[in-house]
Image 1 (cartoon, rainbow, N blue to C red):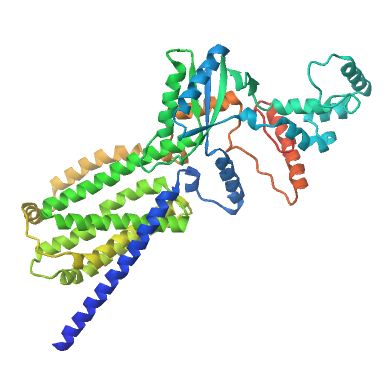
Image 2 (image 1 turned 90 degrees about the vertical axis):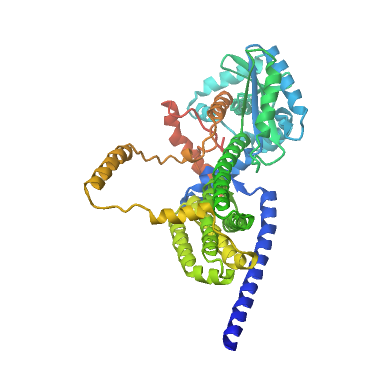
Length: 527
């Protein structure tokens, strides 16, 4: 008898020690959560969900560097058929955004470019900088024609400053090279503003840098709201004035707002339904608080573990993980159902009785979720780790804390009695004619639906921006003539000279595609 009491006391001390250890882990996890949300380590890049290989690792790094260079930039185009109206509308837009200088900071692209510094940088290599057309002209041109061209340039009246004197550059190659570089962009200086023409309108280009991360935990759309207000101020009832805003921050903000909405609908909806069922079944505040505590700890542990392993947590992982509530609540509900059915048993004895079955349920669920991690997709691996860790944390909270925090008995309620009695009246399926007809009717209903299933492997379906924002991005790219940063040829070499030589070969290979109209052009470092 004394040995049994001693063993029971040892088990109790062990349980308390494990509960205290789990409390320390939870406190450390809370500290990590504070750092995580302050650092905004949430990923909105859909490419992060795709598998990477050694061959594409360098391309992935280039993509991220390109994205980082414009991740804080918002581009706005203000246009109308008349330049004076466009300039006035752009000024009104700038004044409206300046009223709230905490979100968008204007960037003067014209002032940011120092032409004198650029001249000084390239001047030592002036004799070696040629465009493709100039190189072809020198290789295939007639010497007499080149001499005549030089004489013509000597005697013609100059309409502007020359970069070199005639003796140093009789053919004007240096000046023409700079003109070809300037032709790369359609944006020109006009009245101190960055201006361009297109689609029958005169446009002003306004560039802004955001002052805070585009992702907002609350799902707010501060940037879009400010741009919408400024656009209304720019138009002022003039239907011919058009305002187009584009940039990665706007897409990230839209994705964050959509993810926040989906997480709220799935997560809070599931939590509300679970807590409502717990209240109806037990009619006590204690089960609601403890079940909610296990769910909160499970979700927080899942986020912390995913952030530690993958450094960042993807928004789609959070949306998928919101469904974890509907699975993790089973542990707490099983415990309180057993407590209700065995009112005279102590909480520790109830937990010892349930522990083998709950552990088996945990193992099967965790194995099922971890199976997602077999696929070489970082997105699926994040979801697998998120779900598995969340279930384990909720399980440990129930097993280690509930027997210590649960005090008092739970009396049966009308809902619990009704559910218990309904199980005894659950219909049994018999192999008769009626069952066969019912199954046949069900098959006729299901088979046509399965036949219409279509497999879509387009990764863009996982993260879709609003159609208006996509159209604005396309219009901005077309007016500015800028290529997509995601479409590039990556050239590698052992030395800078080798890289430039290989890039020249790539340009020669792409030239026929440009002549056929398959490519509009390209930008190359060697140019």
